[in-house]
Image (cartoon, rainbow, N blue to C red; front, side, top):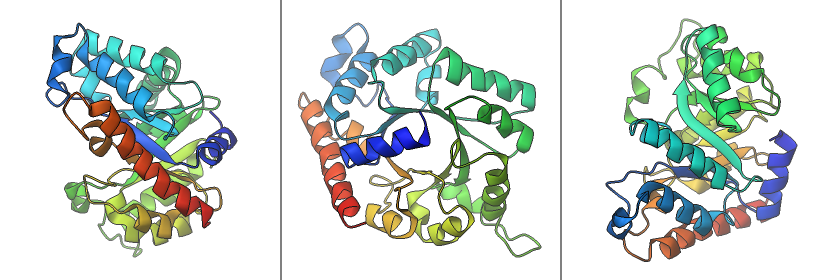
Length: 270
């Protein structure tokens, strides 16, 4: 999917919501466990319940590969069930030397046909560039994450005065373009978006951490939104597990609708 196509979907749905499909069999409604493939059935029902309110889905690959071959089958069937006009992100956080990175890119862009994949940039340019060589595909680089351990390295001050995360974003931005490169920026670090937008004023940002992790949609938009929006706000647990009863689809749909409604108001005031 191209940048313009993604922007058009945002305008059409008045939403920049990404639903994280971090499906844990220990958390899905118990009544689904009697089915032959409870995880796939749960994913399908979540997609049906939320597809009118979101513009992207983001399966967390760890939740599938932990199940072995069956998990990869579930991932592929889940991906096939997602409507073709919705952006898909493989949350895989891959990062390795060039020839290995190329194989990871082929896995997610050719074998599974995702639109984007998350990348860990620690090993440098040759670990990122292979993901940027596929037409209408995206690399999403970890820029500033929302987890507690982010402070261990990402805020380290370098000799030139910039923070490590700033150097990562500034440097990586030169390896691609606004048409094939996004950055992960955690919602719990919303105040850092002022600095980040000075470095990358128009790149799309994938923003996890809104909702269950305490991030604020209003704060993220205050500092990070652009005229083209350029944000994908991810919500996983708050939507997936809005209810663990037989009404889970209705509850998940309502949780997604509520976020979309807030986004619509923000977009109307742009």
